[in-house]
Image 1: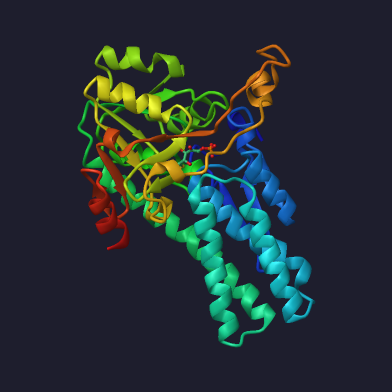
Image 2: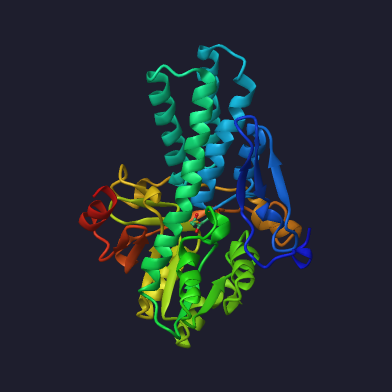
Length: 360
Ligand code: MRU
């Protein structure tokens, strides 16, 4: 079904799980947007892994939710096995899904929650069928909780925005990247719902164009005034005085507030500093990794050169040119005016303030 055929302008659910433990995961295939709205049925864990790896489902919270349901689907091949074999399959599936993408900590956070739930159910003497059902309940909880978390982020973030503000964002931290409402875009959705007239500038976000393909699409679905720019236009738009704040999402935030997000975010933060514009990160508590003192320890995913040489299927560089393709960069805490979480805004961004909000 194409967007033009879509019967409703309401944002469709990017992730849903249908049925009981024998059911399946349904994802919007984000690689097909904005031209086609196609749903992908995931009936085995390999399909879930491939969907995460190839960015059919993407964005830190959405990856975590999809992986949690992926465990349920992956366990379906072990339902008639012994408790020992069922458990071995559980850890095999968890490890397999953990290997899909390295940077977004929400993936590991969600899998860790399932591991803890498994251990608790086993300790309570539950059968494999009961453990499977409890794991599905945990996955559903992670999914539903993210809806509330995103709305709280939107509410806290909207307090930072005044009517008439122009806001720049990078990549896609919208409904598609979460259960349904986004993190950075939740702020804009909330402002819009509150009747604040805002204008969003959208970086197209090379090389995979999450900004132009996904963020521009989401903003248009909700009738929020938006202008698409190429990544290399951000400095000019700031200089022209059109931007009052920058808000992006994050994939992993270290204990000192250093924040990994889509490649190019760091450059935008430097530009914002140069123009005296506040730069905000919007992210749930599940995106913090307090085991890392600084962003230096954040693993940065390196992706296939084909994404740059054959961007969106068209050859745009010599076939054998050397390519460097990190998917993320790390913005130092010193460039971040505040981190908008479901528990409030962390500002100034210091290790003490991060610890107080995240662990407190
Ligand atoms: O490679 P992607 O598209 O998964 O990168 C996504 C981002 O960088 C998002 O900004 C981040 O995950 C936050 S999503 C709420």
